[in-house]
Image 1 (cartoon, rainbow, N blue to C red):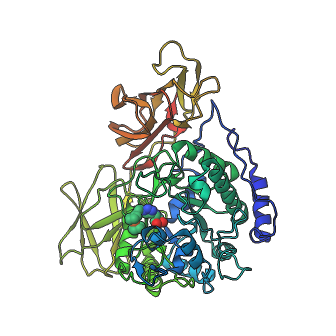
Image 2 (cartoon, rainbow, N blue to C red):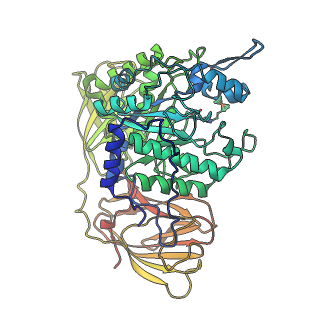
Image 3 (cartoon, rainbow, N blue to C red):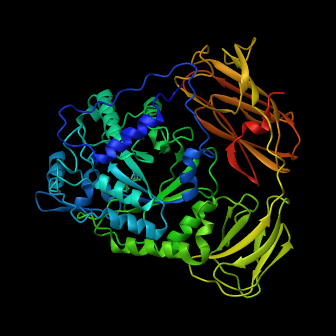
Length: 613
Ligand code: H79
């Protein structure tokens, strides 16, 4: 058992934490974060499938969140005046100003002492998020400068003890209360890289202990729905160099899930790999296609900076931001869009205006249906005139480049197994003609576009009926205590799914040491649609997959966590032989098996469709 804490107890602690509205400063003893018991052989760190778990449903469905970068750097607003009167300015990366301007520690501390964000208005920020249609908020609780935005008991480098701010206020408690009141989820950004804590370069184990203690304060005190780590990288030229390791990530993720199994956690909790945390974190970019093996969320700024900069006026238009949201959704990703309040805590007016513009678009004519609970369409390829998202049996074609009168919008299909029924333009009564053409369909609207950001054409489709859900129980697993799958298996059992993260310390069974093991899974797999299935593995160290006797994934060169894919055409309701082989030599071990098809969103292959024979 990985999760020892009873959920009921966790909830009680949370309620008590809320009633007292955050930790007080009077406590004499620092709250030492206990180190979770080291998991050993038999431990599987993967406890659910984030693609389908109830735990992550809000994150997958909501699609759109607000990032808030707010910290001691906000007080500088992108401009540092040195003691000699000279200045150092940045319009991008204002939250990095201490680093970029080489501000001495005592100077940075001195400026932070004047930080007084008295205009910070949690209700107004939540209202701004709401006006944008954002369903969750992630706020920096500690950025790379190490400054805590809540009254941590672990040091005095925080907004209560080192500022000119009202000692009775706690902006995280205020935000939590305001978010709860509006049904908005709240997540916390926390930087592992720390420019301030002397133990970061001194006694790293001691630093990690303080970090755990701070995270425990955050979780017990504010019950966050999500943890957004950052600063996990190791770059030789960084000052200071970050020693954070994959092992540290394993320990931290385990510690957090033990404290609160319901939290969604990003992949920078580890080393930003497909095997770390619940989801991937492209930054300032949007992937061109759905991401394999992990949920994902693109975080982006509205101008060039995360933390407020007085001189950054390079604002993206509301239309561009709306299209970014459509682009991420159509590839089954989330969009986390940043605001950076100024030194007083006020949100820049251009940010408020842009948020409202996106929200107005989402509100208009039901266009929000193209985003919420929507994702990659599967059955059609992404066109060059816009993007297409899918929600159930509705496709939403968001058109960026409206065709000339009578000209078609072509959609290429990736499967023949569906038909298009009704078609309409949201917010317009115009007739839309859909005809079979070439490798798909031509959509011909008869009127004008409805707005400059994206005009949405809704297409109701009839996908093929899937065969009934299978009655499978999983695959036969033969587990070997060597990495050659030789001799007779040490253990044989039925595994419901192949969803394993044994990492460094775990293994497939208590009798199997954490290095030099292997597993062969065999049985049958039963697809529910007749179409091309793509199998995806996340593996470390080696993997091979056969379906219907064909070797479709073959990566036997020992590797760090890696994604491999193989495709095969399958017929609904038929049972095909499947064989999966994994071996682990030393270090980390992972083995996941996912599938997707035009009508099956990416997911761990469910046990219902697997049989041990
Ligand atoms: O918190 C935000 C960034 O501060 C942080 N991650 C997001 C969410 C981040 N850390 N590293 N990076 C982003 C990439 C490094 C960018 C750099 Fe720069 C280019 C560092 C120095 C030059 C960006 C531009 C930051 C400062 C100037």
